[in-house]
Picture 1: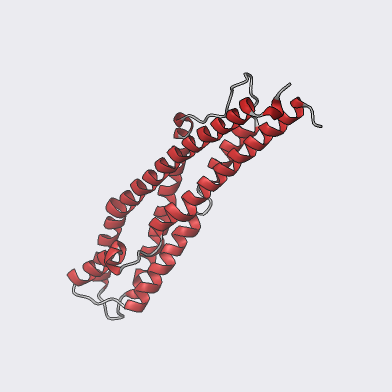
Picture 2: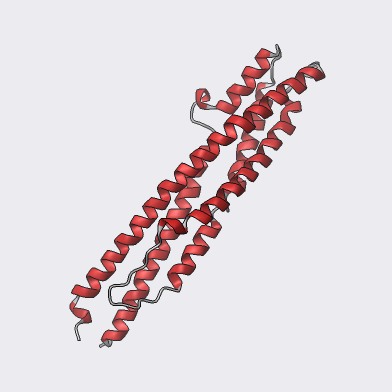
Length: 215
């Protein structure tokens, strides 16, 4: 039969493993579902603000866009966004996993806690990196606009549409996207903090009430 000390050690490692899994799942869902849902094509064309703005600007300038070319460009644009965001939160997993792995309880009732302030520097870094990645993707979209203009479209009109689209992407779309990403992150941060506390409560309850740990 295992000694109480060994059982307590195994219980601690099981607890830490559960926290590590919680961190990985929380972060993966955040990027693969929450943030990705903001970057992918909306389910309805009426919700596709980028497409609708581009069509609106072209109508204002009296030109017609190549619909197939437009759809292809937007698909490539969004694919580029999704791909570029795939590793955005890798530091979040590594940082908090290190905190958990190095945890050593000094008192009987010590548990793993990650206060909200620990997320702040990581989230600032994520926001800065997200802005850069969106900027690169936006430039990709702007560079692709010549492919969706009719061949006889005047150069001045091409430039006018491109300028209006650039202004929209920079001043409205990108800012709204960053705000929505920040909101998704804050929600998942809170979920993770609460989940870690719940795991700690289970760990202590079992440790303090299981007969396995009786001397």
